[in-house]
Image (cartoon, rainbow, N blue to C red; front, top):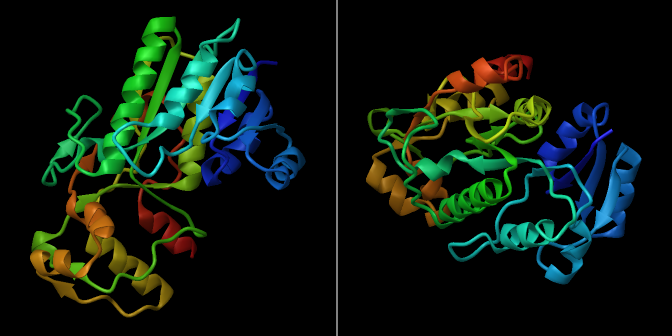
Length: 284
């Protein structure tokens, strides 16, 4: 059985683990003993290391045949220093991971004014966190090209599930000016991770890891409010909402794009069980 190293033991990795254990000997990078105990109980073998303490990463060299990387970059700068240090250690092993699956963000596309985008669209990140994601993608591409290994990049939009729904919004943009975006259910993203690892194709492949129904931000919030019995938030002019919300929230609200998931549906079929957010809301 081949060995998979998970770097980034958050919600998506936990959801993916039951799908991975039948096919992989799974190592999970964790920072603390309590996390190690949880992952061991779930069936993984914990590896205690810290992405922000480079000397602890030396043990990663040569231990895995593949990597599932779901960890975010740090909170500042234009470079994903965490990933850079990980790749430097992986390159020192007598054997290299022959396959990497990386969860990126659809924010790398920037604002497309509501236009449809597929995976060939140019990258034009606007927010600092999206800039760091572009840097991460470039690092991974260079590593895969240099060492002749396979790379899958999953560009995910807003992730949701029954346990991770967005909170109430105090203000929403008028429908005529609203931004449009896709979403992805957390279980569907976990399924895509497992499917990408099973596929084992050579070279580099990028996927829009998203649902099939782009929605205006306000329409998604209205659907959620109606489902959960919240009052609908008021609609305001775009400029007024920008003045009222934090810069971080505005960076999410401002960008507008519609993502095509045709490639995912064609090459990683059967993973999207929630093609529309309504599919979850009906269950709630």
